[in-house]
Length: 148
Image 1 (cartoon, rainbow, N blue to C red):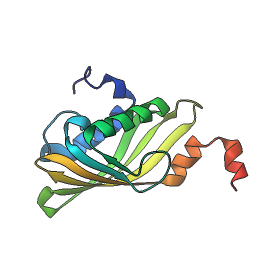
Image 2: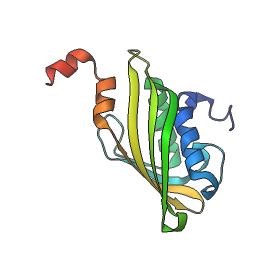
Image 3: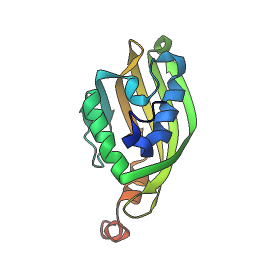
């Protein structure tokens, strides 16, 4: 993996490595950002501070820059890969484990992502996650009690 080109994103490497491993020989490129199209669409079906739809590789890189300023991932595991449409659609289930940098709170979350490939790159990504796990890790305990 090119270490210097994407060094600023090191805190998300466990996620990037898991995705790259999941897609194997279905895509070309070493790093996650190398395997997305320039006009990729990255869609998240939850509302926790990320834009619901990110359009383009450059915008996706900007979004991940913000992510690594908040969370440092130590690992990503429990990968399950399902392929469909003769490899043009891949569904991955996985977990990430890390730390919220501002508070030191543990961050553990589960995801299911539906990936559409075109020309051996990610053209569209639709993400589902355990929103409560993210909210619990990112929201101070005092605010959690207030909202109950």
